[in-house]
Image 1: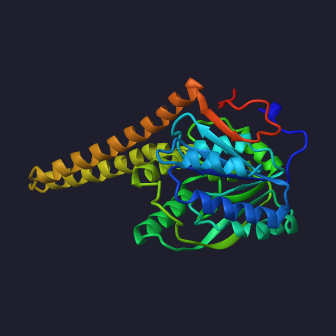
Image 2 (image 1 turned 180 degrees about the vertical axis):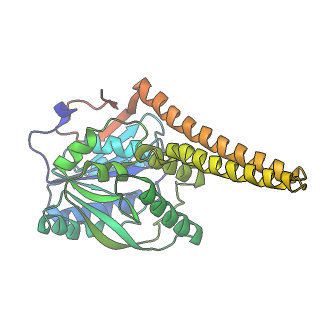
Length: 331
């Protein structure tokens, strides 16, 4: 969508996907706008992406855009999910640098100036925020997040930084490289790691959620984890071949054990051990079939080439954008 880029870009775009964030939006806008002015003066834009919210988020975004010429509010046609809503914002922003931040204010926008300084001093294309502390999160969430990131690091060929979310600052050339990736099932932080360029960490303490409840329940977290693993690793598929080798070895040992017992006149007795073997083998087979199904499902979705998102309404000054419609997967 290169024809939608402005000839003269603002210095900074801030992209914020939103879902049912009505209670946060006023404070979010005030803090983000103040942080942007402290960093680049008036040369910035804020994109709020309404991802099919069921509360008053869109109405509040429209009102905010009427009072702030820096704000562009984009209403997607339905709930596409956080990663596709974020993709929409990244595709439609036009700044030389792009800050990605969530709407719940757990990631402080006031860190923007320091992140820009880090980018300039280290000549980086990506400054990704690394969480030192995670205030307001349950022990279950902290433990599962830690396990997930470390397991993902072991499984994938691409090194994805530990304890990071989507909160990061990117240069225009890094963003353009990211937007060239066409996949439908998107795991943005993994895709950013895959594109390369110089990427540096920025440590910070994550705050509590400003208002409302998390929009990432267990089901969505599991789906994101599956997208991450299947999008950046073939290790689950390789598990089938590794399991077959181990089971073949175990079968040989079992065969020797049975033969040894037979020649000693004490053949193996009982159905318990037999059923245990059947259950274990069946569980492994079902796991392998399930993972094959996940990969086949991804191929099926990719083959349809549907648009990644659809835009229903836009509020605010859409400078430099010839049209706002959708982003399709690329051939």
